[in-house]
Length: 157
Image (cartoon, rainbow, N blue to C red; front, side, top):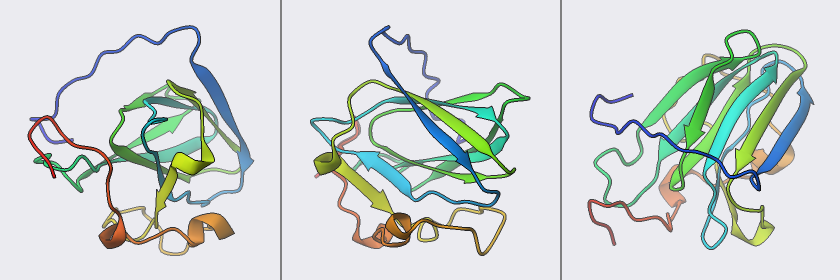
């Protein structure tokens, strides 16, 4: 993570929704997804079984970090969590069989606000070249075609 990125501290309301992604096979890669306004979501992500490489990508128009990504291994063993604010794509690669990933989200999911960018169009080093990808995620758009609805505090459209 670039040294100039802010450290984010946040407290979650008890009303936040918890989403559990059920066990997945090893080397499953999820497209980098985002929820657009008015249902944009902050997410707190953890892996409660197995291990994943969790990735966040800055897509806030005008951000000096636009298009840059950070990756962190989350596992049941290390207990690490990743906070992903609004304006960031989120994706992961399972590193072990039977992974279970949990999210705390600040807004409900709305399919009309759901977007995704293809996993291999962001220059991310996933550590593998042929992951298992769902049919839906395989159809995600390339990053070059993504039109972000988010503006950064540094400016924008």
